[in-house]
Amino acid sequence: MIKLFQQTTLTMPELLAFLKKGKDLYPRCLLISEISAACQSGNDTPEGEGEKYLLSLLSRRSKQERTIAYCTLSCLEGKNEEILADFRNQSRNRKLMRAINRMLKD
Image (cartoon, rainbow, N blue to C red; front, side, top):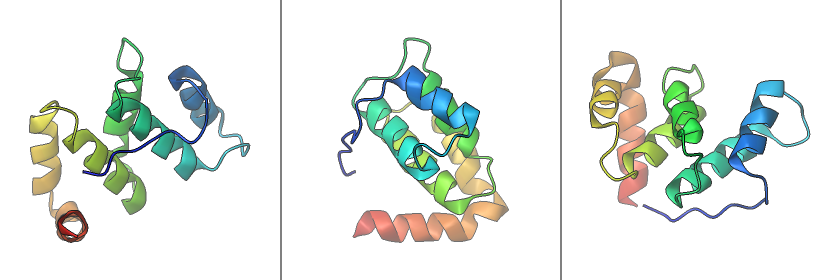
């Protein structure tokens, strides 16, 4: 897995607040990427709010958001294995999982 680095100095609470407000100050994809980078480097909140947000993205309609969430969550030290297995086995995610697997092999 590629190591992600935050591009902003926003904290996890700030990132989540921007996403909840829906303001256009930062692109949504950047905020999600920043949450992924923070979770991957161990900078989530003590309550795991960033990880919870990524878990919520697994049920979203956006393939891009589901892809980012799956890839990030799959590298977080064996957490959420049951949820990720369920995600992989859902019929709506079969094509997406083939694309993710191809992407991760490269």
